[in-house]
Image (cartoon, rainbow, N blue to C red):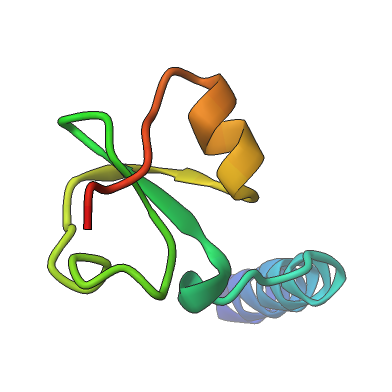
Length: 73
């Protein structure tokens, strides 16, 4: 019984690793953050690192098209 469980766990782990290898990972610095107040921050924004509650977007255009706006500064 232990052998079956071990084989099953190894199979699940191998499958999970294979799935993650196929998934492209986007660096956090490449993510546009739309804050809860609707401001779109890219990595050049002075508030990028401070923004913790946000909706991520792939591009600034997507963020702006969703109703977000650019920072004033």
